[in-house]
Length: 101
Length: 350
Image 1 (cartoon, chains in turn green, yellow):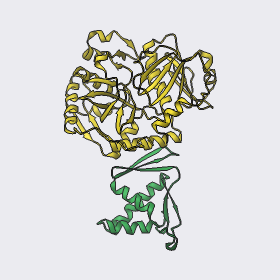
Image 2: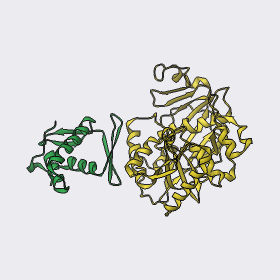
Image 3: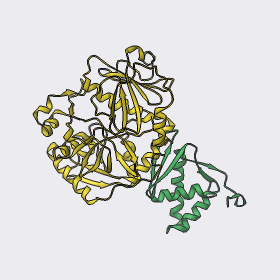
Image 4: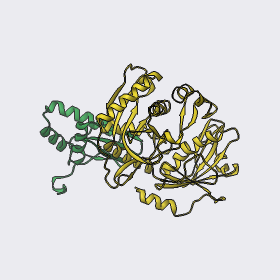
């Protein structure tokens, strides 16, 4: 399992588009298409824009009325699936001082 | 990605890697394209082409040697269908009893050869359907596997794979006075801030039972699509077809036959944009070309389309006698959703 201290980025050759309020993904290398429901789409945005998974988790916890004990495994499962499909890649978190303004 | 204007420029400039023949003498309009051919085709003359150009040239067997000599791309050379992408990017396709085609890598030219046992009508179905789809995709278009009719001055498309019932449903609409826009292959494009559906060849492919039901006994005395099917090619007379581009109002994705078998009633369900996107992807006409630039363009096109057009799942029992009921359900659904023509932002094809 990936550490929450790591940061997730969109894998090369993966396309993401919003259709309505839902996301669709294509991995050009595997030709896999995937659809995300509105919650999954929000998770995707949070994960791919945050400096770390922990930061994304904190943002989602603040945004949704959800217990930490429920959000954490849901997010972990979501991340595992996206990593498994090679749609996201994990790397070191961005240091606070290095975050873009 | 290439826009419509760019397509026209590239279609009329540059040189083809194909050898020049006698040169095309006939000009036709279909799917919004100008088709020029050195051989007469059963198509309307060029009245509304302009999206792009495709040149069709009759060529003898020697022109296909590079493709037919090659082994291993698509297995058995005696199989019904053979498909090879050659080193120069051109595409060779062949149907055993129909003919063979070589589509240039830039999609601007198709060389063709009709086999002796194929009727002209049958050959043209493959030339202007499957073979042409390679040229369209190569030129940056995304054809949909759909049949479209004009209902109350709006185009309505039925999306689905082979044997999903697209043509049968269209025939039922024609019986009630609607006009045929296209059968099997649908090209969408933008013009004057509207999403337009373009007319295809004036013919419909139907099994004899359905042809008899909707067009009378005489309709069954027609040419078969190929020797291995009972499906007939029915020419559609001018008064029953719509020959100009027209605004697209809705796409109905037909339920797969196996799902339709389980239902007793007619239902129309509006799909979310995400569901619509996936249905549109499944409804692509040409699944063979899967290079990354094509997939990338297709992804953007389908996502944009899913945002712009109402896509609905249409489920109904597969029984001829129920088709009028399906037709009325679609009409009622269209009336509920009646709205002005869609406005498309510039750059739709980007």
